[in-house]
Length: 173
Image (cartoon, rainbow, N blue to C red; front, side, top):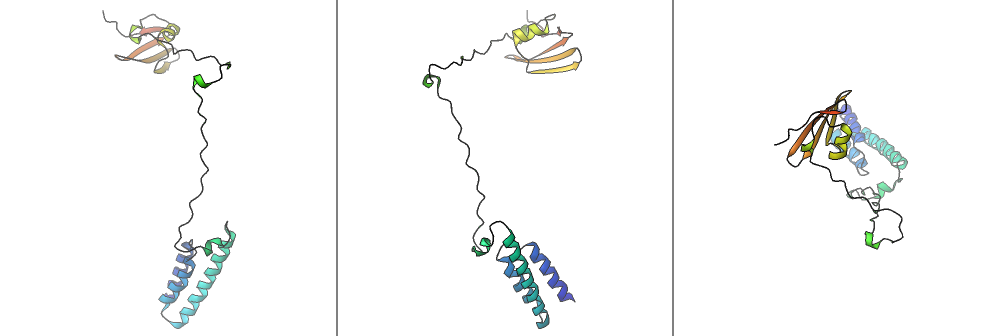
């Protein structure tokens, strides 16, 4: 009974690891070598043949058919093919472009004032127009906003309530 359990355990183990074509032969050899008696060796060979038949049918149903069984056991599986990366189109320099192009040149980036000059009672729209968009804007209430500007001297915090600046950086006098 113990030998039958060993054979069954070996067969189940063999089924779980038989992804390699040469592994189908390892199970019958292992089973017959560990059986120890003549009566159970025949049963092991029968199990081995059954498993080999199952693996053969499995290989036929997999993509590529049975060509995997003809490969050498020591050969590594082929790496999956990857699509070639798409070639990026690099625009030609402006001098090389056709002079008849109708696209207008990009306007220069706007120059904004130093956010340290923001003063109390300025409107939100005026702050955006003169100092540009803030680095961060947090709406705390329905009518209150905290703005954070980045200046050369450091960060500048501004609070706006009802569209009017209520907290601004202190001007150095």
